[in-house]
Amino acid sequence: MKKVAIQGFEGSYHDIATRQFFKDEETELICCETFGEVFATLKSDSNVIALVAIENTIAGSLLHNYELLRESEVVIIGEQKLRIAHCICCLPDEDWNDLHEVHSHPVALAQCEAFLQRHPELKAVQADDTALSAKEIKEKQLRGHAAICSVHAANLYGMRILQENIETNKHNFTRFLVVADRWKADELRAEGISQQTDKANIVLSLPHEEGSLSQILSIFTFYRINLTKIQSLPIIGREWEYMFYVDVTYNDYTRFRQSIDAVRPLTKELKILGEYKAFESNR
Image 1 (cartoon, one colour):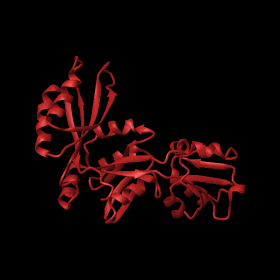
Image 2 (image 1 turned 45 degrees about the vertical axis):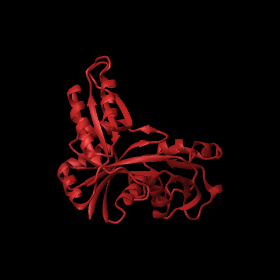
Image 3 (image 1 turned 45 degrees about the horizontal axis):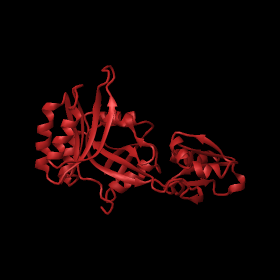
Image 4 (image 1 turned 90 degrees about the vertical axis):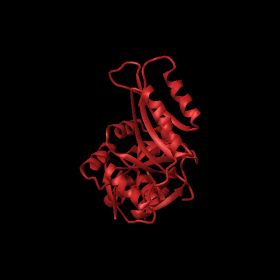
């Protein structure tokens, strides 16, 4: 059985993504309140794997998680993409006419803004987690309260689903990274996870000189390395200098490593955060 740390609770979208990535295996969830706690768990127990949200098609990148990745010694071994679909649920014996509050994570509330505007009688209340909102309403029997969460969470906690797919944008996806201690990553690769890689995450810093970034991009182009994402974050205490987090895909691993060897001398710092198999929807 694999121990997997997530931010959130059973029934959360992290939980669903974990089940999908490890769909043929038994997992034991370690539920953490914050992403910092997730990485602290990884540091304290090298047998733990973690699944961490890194970006959403609507909300954008989770910038703090990039920093947590860079500062840790863990490596990325895979990714999972999940369609985010929200429902509204309540206690089993209640209905629309009984409700006056709806609880959920602030991001989920924002993603259901159009639905909430159509229901001005419902006061939106921010909570720490989507699944936890449903769990607390059921356990505390909070009458008149509804939760916005996944269908999985509503069913898990025995809530009544009033309406599904209430999110404003139906093309709402979150990408999660699967990370582990380096020793654990080697063990997982021996089991067959990410033995054949075609994607990598890199973090690098560059001299504050004209054309430094364009030089790097030109080298990747020469080696036919496809940049799927580039995210810059300022380096605290070093004015106008940035860390660049780069996602690349490749068809030839040897050419990828050659591109890294060519790029490295032009950087002040370069670290490969992980090499893995890109997400495939039909996996």
